[in-house]
Length: 409
Image (tube, rainbow, N blue to C red; front, side, top):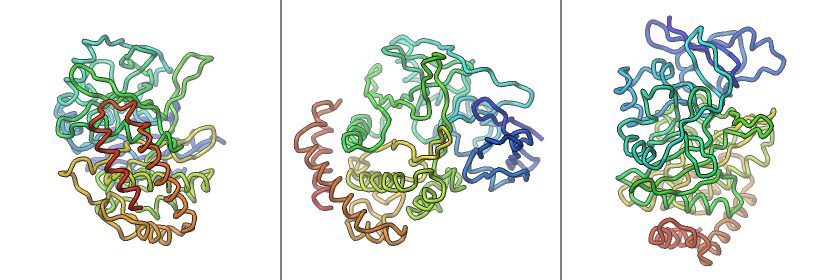
């Protein structure tokens, strides 16, 4: 039976195995269970001496890995089966989202490092050009990088004006996402939506746009990393997305396919957040903003929990995109609002239904809709976003679309 040791903050917490039929099995280490300050690696994997098998073990670990096209290309490069979660974790599970890493049995974890391969502009251009063919630079010597999601992306270290690849056990600090060719304007769209959220007071990571070669890219600061000035090192913070926390595999991230519903997300925060009142209101703000900007693709993997200093909190929002900018994309909501399933049909009555289903106070939800919609209209009317936009034409079109949505709400 193949085994990988699961590390959290460079400390062994358990073993992940693959049985003869290919199913995953996870068991916490007795030494970890004996610690007074031991924490579970997932809400869906409570501390126990029993082994989690198959459908109970897979959602968390499969949720670490890339999805869809990037996953298929990585599997082809590494010469493994696309469906083999264990083999992929074995090859690229060294630098994941959060503070989890997986290493072969008997291989001790390296101490946190600051070992980098600095990239000049020509290197960056070559890597960005190569990413569609080699997601996460799969197979590159010294790199064991894994990030969930269906979009091409690359974890890097950004220090002032330099960009480097993290080597060994060096944590990355940012993620570069090049614009896919089939969604022109995506970078300008996402930068605008993230900046709008920031001005509104929502918790979002810092984002910047940069053209590398001829390819627009968005560079996102990782919220699951923190810099320790005393040691001069970047440290990892543990996190998991809502699909992992609720025990849903990544292929079930959409509600219509069995993915999380709003009421389940609210219940998760009520039970699991250490500050549920604040986090539930923040989640409501995120749900409202996604409807105001016209984001039909806000699914269970686009919301996460962040674990830090004994606290369990709703993580900053990410992947905020006005998907209505591309008429060819589906307008069906990844997560329904009440009985509303189409992003273009949502109105306050749907939010009232959502509030009833999730046992939220309708006056609070109604007030947040009015406040956020009103603020967005003012921000866009004043042109505060267009001034910093990487693409004025995209900014003007989105401003018009979003303003009309806010007026209707």
